[in-house]
Amino acid sequence: MNNNKLDETDRQLLRILQEDSKQTTKEIAAQVHLSPTPVFERIKTLEKEGYIKKYAAVLDREKMQDITVFCNIRLKQHSKEYMLMFIKAVSEIEEITDCYNISGDYDYLLKIVARDMDHYQSFVQNRLGVVEAIGSLHSIFVLKEVKQTYAIPI
Image (tube, rainbow, N blue to C red; front, side, top):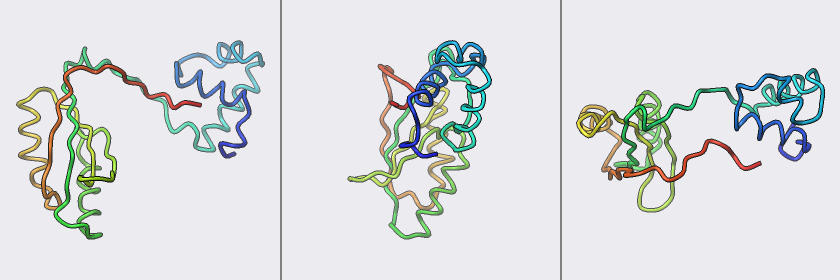
């Protein structure tokens, strides 16, 4: 099943699950005007085909009292060795929630969550600072989160 093969019911199921995946199959079935069995089968197919990667709880960052930092990274070199070294390091660091290979003045954009400024300073010195592939970094601190969504427009 590819994106072109999704019918309107599949798209509706994905929208519903993105909004609240904790609903029962029966509750979802009522919203799409089908019985629970075909809805269950469709959801299983969407999972099997990789449209649904996983289910997770979304935590409230304000309640967690964390800070969010975007960090632009420039590698020392654009060699395969340095890129692989960087990707491996980033994959193993818990505070990094997102990593994007980007175009422009920087090579990567990281989204980092830290408990506070002291934690971030220690993180930069002891975690990012020891990654040999990194040539320079530039940190941008989020003052207020205006919009955050995990939903993909369908």
